[in-house]
Structure formats: structure tokens, C-alpha cells
Amino acid sequence: MKNVIKTNVPSPLKTQFKMLCIRNGITISSKLEKSILDLINTKPDIPNELRLASDDPVVVKGYIPESLKRQFHAFCVERGISMTLVLRYLIENSVESNNH
Image 1 (cartoon, rainbow, N blue to C red):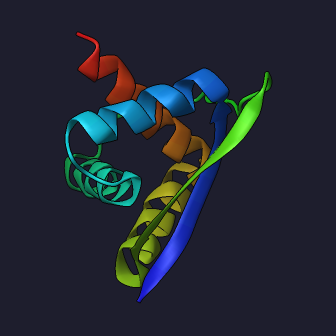
Image 2: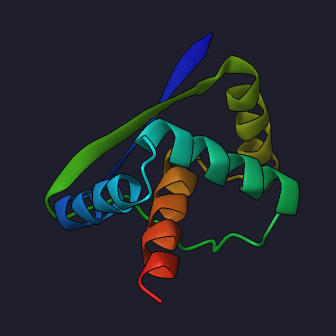
């Protein structure tokens, strides 16, 4: 069973993320799922100054397996960071690393 995950990002970031997925022939859900799995497996340091979108926010959502959502939730709780903020962080990093 798949569960929804979502975050708010600036509209231009959502467009860039969607284009990244389209260029790579993948769905937003599969990109988010892979990014979350990589995050859980590598356990990188996540900046404490993460913030939600404040200007022109739009929703990005994806669907991931229930078991992965539980792992992701536990990962975020351990670090004291909301899932929403970590999702935005993953989206920003995906777009940024694709532009280099």
C-alpha cells in the first residue's frame, strides 16, 4: 500500500523538480522514494535551518510504500526535523545536483 507524502516548495522549484523527473523518465513519486531510501541508507547531516516555502508555495506530493514512510518518519523524529522540511531539502538537493 502506498501512502502520500507532501511538502510546500516555491513554484519555480516545483517546476524544476518536475522537469528533472520528466527528463529522467521517472515519476515524482519514484524520485522521492529513491531520495528517501538514499537518505535513510546514507544518514547525511541535515541542516538545522530548514524552512518551509514562504513565497508562492505550491504542494509537491508523492506516494511511497507504507513501510518506507514509517522508516522516513523514524529518521526524521530521531533528528528532530519534520518530514515536510526534509522532503523540501531532498527536492532542493535533487534539483541542485542536477544543475551541476
